[in-house]
Length: 174
Image (cartoon, rainbow, N blue to C red; front, side, top):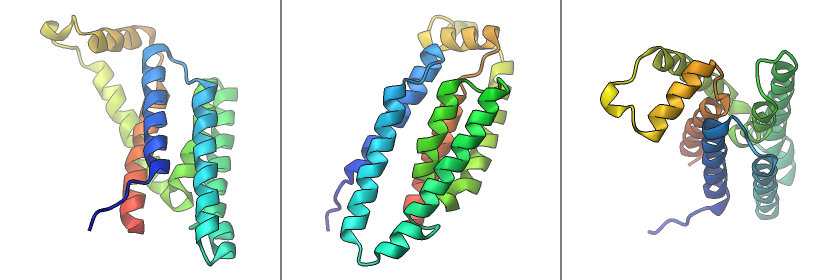
């Protein structure tokens, strides 16, 4: 039996990867990407509501849209607080909203653990010196710029933690 490709998560993954790449390249997450992620989520939520016989459960449960919106708002509030204390940039804070929407309430713990692991691995990687033979590659040169500036593109770590959580969530749901 052939499976269908669900365009909602595929579009979200592509936009999340673009946000991570943009943050890596120039420490900036475009507002349009965040808005597009929210719009894709809304389209997916409408499709779920239109195809379920259990509208109340889909809308209000922690497993459904209610839990996803709660996760998005909680992460966004945390992001704004971190931005206010100048730990995060505004793009990172805004990116937390669609991340919460896509990982959902029950994915929050896994997301937090992957975020912690990604942060630790990033800090360790930035402490290591790159081999001289690789120094001419653009990605390596950008990593050296990040190391010298001491500014971490947190969006990259956040996106990869979110993507791993989304994969685990989709496997759990099926």
